[in-house]
Length: 187
Image 1 (cartoon, one colour):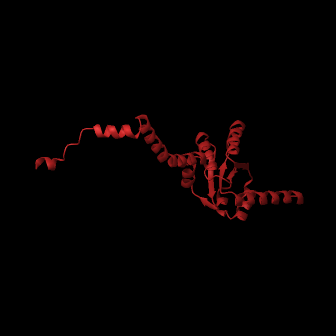
Image 2 (cartoon, rainbow, N blue to C red; image 1 turned 45 degrees about the horizontal axis):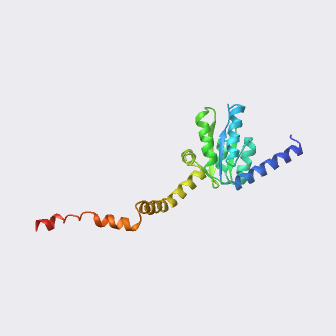
Image 3 (cartoon, rainbow, N blue to C red; image 1 turned 90 degrees about the horizontal axis):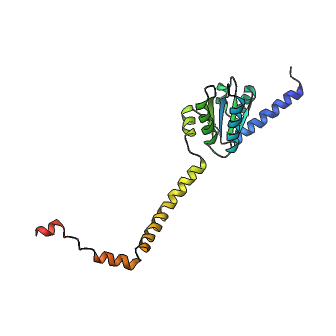
């Protein structure tokens, strides 16, 4: 029978993990079996740079934390080696990094994930992993806002380069008159 202090430590871990699950917007559960220390260090560094919390957990502790957080569907995959990555700020970061990592490492597998408190299927995880980063999405939106303004600026600059509005008007007046439409010519 475990000592009282060990039970208290485990209860504290479960409570902390449960809070982490409740407060995160997304999380990915993986099997990290067969990766070496160097690869694991690179993976953890990339996750940290994207504000993703990654930790190896015991299945029983994660199972209890999932019960408290209302994510009981995760419990069915809790066997073997288990790690969890959670994000409080970006929806796609954990899925993108871990799915890309799993492509390059045979033994590393994505088990399941959740999004806004609901467990999602593998197709949704893969779709989520293919989303661009938050910075790329913001750049695309800003580019879309900037395009009409940039087009207007180029048009104004073209007028200035031709010598101003008067030069453009004179050029238009010097152009040969358009021929009458075919209907008028037949009359």
